[in-house]
Image (cartoon, rainbow over all chains, first blue to last red; front, side, top):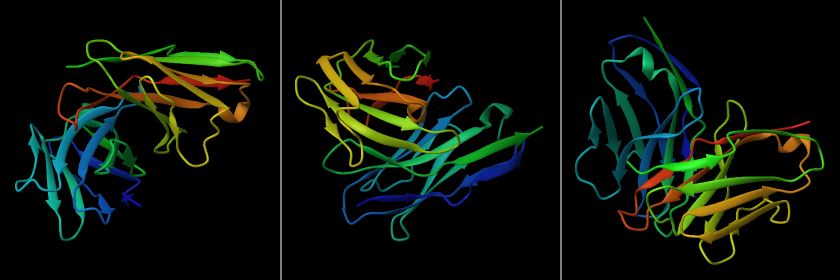
Length: 114
Length: 117
């Protein structure tokens, strides 16, 4: 069984500052994929970044980077230079190796202050 | 990028009626689509996996006779909430996997908000 844990229900960040969203996971499978999605108030799920369990380097996509610490089973998302439009709910998710189903964490609400 | 649409985006219905929600992949073929349910301020919970040309696979605790899923073509999956009740009010969102690209490519639709009165 897989489990995704996001322990921060909500966070405030000042505009232009960086913010780190925590995500830990639990799986016995050696092969898995980790995702981060952004969900604004409109409800759409926006893909941000992906990290494969065998990837040697941490994934980066623009202002988003994933701090992947495999031994600690953590996949924290770092958003640099926060913008007001970054205010949203952020979900960490994991894909099992044998299918494409995603298991989601509880989510973290980020509010960017001007 | 790839686009997944859902229709309707909003639906209000009376208790006891059935509601059909469509999920379409607009510019790619999706052999597999997923249906999720999300209550306010909560996470997405997978309801079922919809496979083109075969029966859907439901997650534990999801009533298959209550939530009928049909995946008749490579671009369309439908979720029918039968005999809807107020507790079925929720945000339903689908995702589709592009069979032609990396297995990690999965796109979400914009979601459907269902309110059962």
